[in-house]
Image (tube, rainbow, N blue to C red; front, top):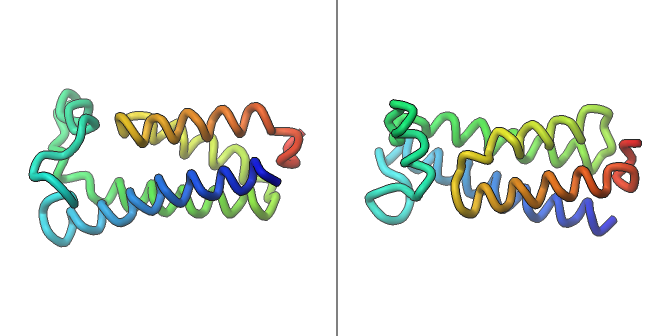
Amino acid sequence: MIAKYSLLLLAALNGGWMLFDGLHVIRKGKYFGPDEPGSWSKVVSFLGIDPFSIGPVFVVLGIFWFLSVGGVLLSSSWGWLSLLVTAIATLWYVKIGTAISLIVIAVLVTFRASLGYA
């Protein structure tokens, strides 16, 4: 049960922030906070993508965090894999997003059986 609540908290933090920040950049043309985005923007820029153009990606990933953790909490057959894929897809979100994703991956793998995914 603690694993499920931990996943819920981590997904709410990561997904909630990504959803909020993605909507903010879509509406305001900049991310919440300083004018220059965080360390993750260097990864995205290196790939030739304008960091200010990926607000919709943040929104989609934020929604996936909530849907995926919901699947795990409801013990849906797709929940575990969906949350794993969402966490992996968020590893590029350097610093806090990467840390949260790594913790979620570790919890999913370590407590797979106790989460109901044998």
